[in-house]
Length: 250
Image (cartoon, rainbow, N blue to C red; front, side):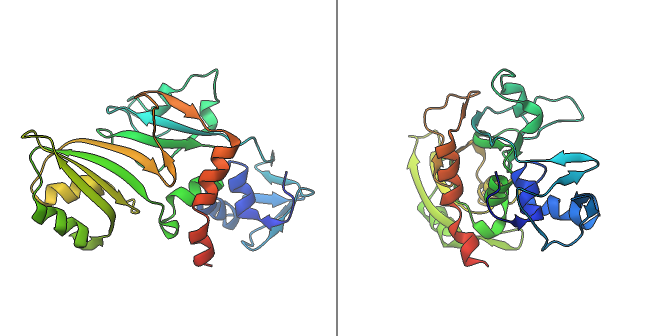
């Protein structure tokens, strides 16, 4: 239930209609009505007493669901695929959740694996994906050969990829005794395939790429191909852990 009036776009996001940015686009297109009146003002606020509609369908808050899934390689991080390839929704049990209402938050390459969040909570999705929140993510990267201390320092100091510097929050590496290195890297960027591009730029092949953490939530003991439905407390903790950047950017 909405206790206080909030902006219409945020209301739509909380109801799982779309991300806040996409909700703003719907409003500007005149697709949203409040109490039978079309609203195109992004500053317009609504409360629990208002009736919000899109295409004659009443929009109301729904139970928030968030799932932490350990994605295997060979699955797309999308809700659907025109070429009928496997997506992460194929890993969910119909009896546990309604697949149609869940959307993956952020990217994880087809060949990569590890933690990905699926949710119907537009506000949580917005916080995780919008660059202004700078949500840290941790990856484990296996390289085809030992990474040199020189290259480790190059990454730490800020390596330029596609004319933009990648700022690394933390980095460590350990040798796999002649079979490569296991590099743990923490970043807050979401550029497409940015981790792979870093190592390719330095002349290394990435044999394996696994995401182990998003914000304060760690993959933990969730087995590959399996998932965990987060409790309301866990959803709140994850949301609150990335709330501070929003306050700093107002």
